[in-house]
Image 1 (cartoon, each protein chain N blue to C red):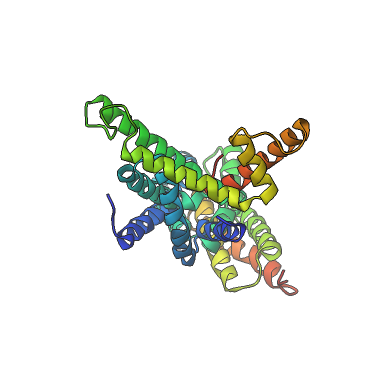
Image 2 (cartoon, each protein chain N blue to C red):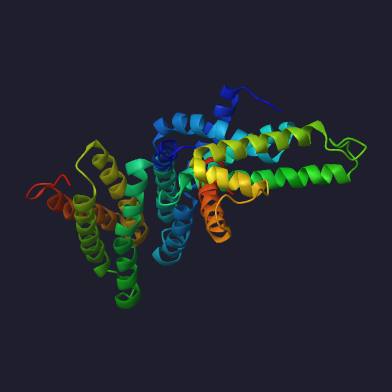
Length: 177
Length: 182
């Protein structure tokens, strides 16, 4: 989520907390895809949709007590994270009760796990694309264990700085590193 | 399970409206000891319960509606504390014989002070706009109902005196010499 949309969400949620019903639709339109995307990163599709819906309804149920001094995105994602945790626990219980699992019998990752991994890789690539090319190159070289193009200490420092920027970009888009 | 976006929006809307009502619960919880005090000290249980119910209804409606109404209700709760407590205090200390001549005067004086404080606050903090009227009306209604819980000790004359005091305390501060628009 870019800075402009984030600020718009902050303003709209503050207005909604104040009782301004006109802000309902903009908040809904902003949050629904965001929460659906957030949930689908951590849950398989069938659970993600339910968790995102529950999170959305809870966000609106608590909107009246939202403190406008708090960060709206973090507050919303905090509620969503709790819903995701609950959905995971529910899923775990279902597994323990002997319901069929999504994993393939021979221990290989199932299509669902592969899809999640693919989505995560895409998200990392998107976050890297937001960085300065030099930062992205340093991180790629570091991840691939390639020989550093500059001296060791300089390279380490560059990787450290690039990681901090990547974390920031990821946090703005996805809510947590 | 995927649901149509319109259905989800309606569900979210219902949750929001219910959440607004729930947001009044802390204020309603504050009212309970006030009603309790009134029931115990004022010896007019029907009137105390009636004022309490009215107050809860106004608080719920104001919190649900939000905006200036919710803010006005909070201000009214504070402004009404004087007319609630002062008559009870004067009766407890000075009217052991059963006649509370000081109570009506206490109602009027506390209401004048509460009204003036409310007017000063509204004049400084609430910009002159159509919303300001909603703020003031709600604040005065809540202050009057909170004050009634205490002034019921002096009977109907106490309540009328308190309401008059609130209006007289608020009006000059708001309209004299001229309201600022900041």
